[in-house]
Amino acid sequence: MRVSRLLTETLREVPHDSEGGNQELLLRAGFIRQLTSGIYSFLPLGNRVIQKISQIVREEMNRAGGQEVIMPILQPKDIWEKRPANGGSTRAEGYGPVLFSLQDRKGRDMVLGPTHEEVVTLLGMEFMHSYRDLPQLIYQIQVKERDEPRPRSGLLRTREFIMKDLYSFDADQEGLGISYRKMAEAYNNVFTRCGLHFIVIHADSGAIGGKASQEFIALTEAGEDDALICNTCGYAANIEKAEFVRSEPMPEPETALEEVYTPNCKAIIELAAFLPIPTAKIMKTVCYVAGDRFVLAVVRGDLEINEVKLTHALHRAGVDATHLHLATPEELEQARIVTGYTSPLDKDEQVLIAADPSLKVGKNFVAGANKQDYHVKNVNYPRDFRVDLWEDIASAYEGATCTQCGGRLHMVHGSEVGHIFKLGTKYSELFGATYLDAEGVSHPLLMGCYGIGITRLMAIVVEQRHDEKGIIWPFSIAPYHVALVGLDLDKEESRRITEQLYTDLTAVNVEVLYDDRMETAGVKFNDADLIGLPLRVVVSKRSLKNGGIELKLRSERESRIVPLGGTAQRIQEEVLKGLTQGPGGHTVSSR
Image (cartoon, rainbow, N blue to C red):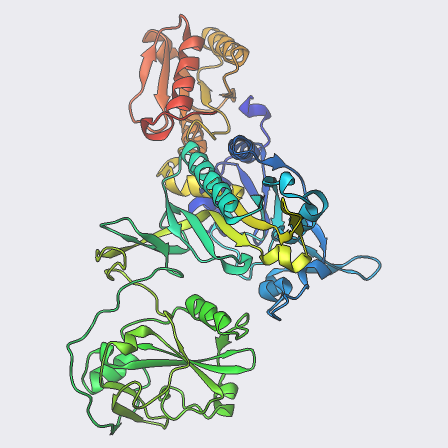
C-alpha cells in the first residue's frame, strides 16, 4: 500500500479533546476517528490490526475445537426478562440502563445485545439433545453494544466494541473442566502471540454469573482494574475477589460500655484523632438499601467495605441486592439512622446486619451511639450487638497477608482483556435447555462463557508498547510489517530503486506500507515512528552512497546498512524472524 493512496492522515498536534494514552496515539497515527462519545470508526490501518487480532483469536479457538457462528445483535427483550425459578432478578434488571433498549415498528420491545448467553442457550436447545451431541464449543467475533454511563480511556471503555465470545456446552463437571482448561490455554496463546504482558487472576463473575472465573489482566497504569498478587506463592485475584488474613490484635478482657461525647467526629480519621485511638479499634458502619431491606455493613475502621463482596453475600442470604445502593438522606431519616454516628447497637430485626470477620478477632471497639455527637466505647460481639451475616465484605490492600502462604499481597494496575467463566446451569435451567444421558435421564446442559475484547486488546497493546515518538507494534498484529520510506524520490536512481524494492517485497508477500509522498525526511520519519510498524526500510541518496539501504527495527535505536543485492529476501527473513520469535525474542507458533 502506498501512503499517498491510504485513507488516513497523521495529526501533528494533540487533539483538543484527547483522553491521552491509546486514544491519542491511535487518533494521531490515523488508526481511528471518533464519531461521538464511546463510538469510533476504524480506518484502514486500524481495521488491519483488528483483522489480525481476530485471526489469531480465530486460529486458537478453532484449534481448541470451537465452531464459529454469527448471532444477532438485535434481540427480543423478553429473553432478557425471564425470571429465575428462585425469584431473583432478571438479566435486564441486572444490566439496568447499560442495556440499549428500543421497539420495532410493531411495538415489540427489543435490545441491542451486550452479550449472547440467552441467544446461544436457545441455539443449544435446538441441536444438543443427547450426551452424544456434547461437548460443543460455539463462538463468534462480533460487535457488542453497552450504554456505558462514562465511556473513557479511548478504546478501553466504549459503548460499541468488538468482542469474541465463546460458549461451551458439556454433560458433566468433568467435561466442563476440560472445556475451561482448553480455553485457559487458548487465551494464554492468544495474548502471548499478540505481544501482551499479562497475568491470570481469580475474578468476580459480575453480571454474567457463574461460580468460577478467571480474568486475564494486561498490566498497564491506564487500566481500571486493581489486582493483588502474592510476592511469595503467586496467588492473584482482582480486588473484588481477593482474600486476605485479618491481623489479630493483642488479647484483652472485655470492659463495660461507656458513652463518650465526640463532637463533629463523623469520619473514622476524625474520631481516631479525637479519642485518640488506632482506626483498627473503631467499627465502621455504612447503611445500604437492597430491595426493600436496610442493610448495615460493618467492618473494622482500618478496612474498606467491598460492595461487590457485600452484594454477593446478600444474594447468598436470599436478599435481592441487584440494585444495592448507599441509603439516601431520605431513606436514612425513614430508618432513624444518624449519619456518621450509627452502629449495629440496638437495631431492630428489620435492619439486616452484615459484618466482616475482622470484628471477631478484636475487643472493645468504638462504635456510633446512634445519636448526634456521641460514640460508645468497649463494644463487643456477641454481648452488645447481633450479626445476621458474617461474611468477607472488606477489600484486600497493599501489604495485606496472603491466605495461601502468609506472604504479602502487592497491588498492580491493569485492564481486563479476557474473562472465562464456569456458568454451570444458570442459563440452561432458565430456558429449560436439557439433554438425555445414556440411561435416558434428562439433565440441564452445563455451560461456560469465555470472552476477549478485540478492540480493547488493540488499545492495551498500544498502552503497553509505545514511546515518546509513537506506537511500537509487534510483528504479529502490526497493520503492515515494513515501513518503506523513500527519500530523494525526485532523483531518478532513488526513485527507481525504491519502486523496484516495493515491487519485489510485494511479490514475496511482505506486507509493506510505502511512503511515496514528496515530503521531507523529517515528516516521513516522524510518521513512520508514530504509526509504529516493526521494521523501517529507508532508501535515500545517503544510504545508497553508504552501500545500500538502511534497516531499523522500531523497537531499537540503531539502524544498519545492508547491500542492495538480495535486499527483498533479507527483509523477508527479518519479517519471518519477527513473526516467529515474537516480542522479547520468545518463539511464537502460529499453529
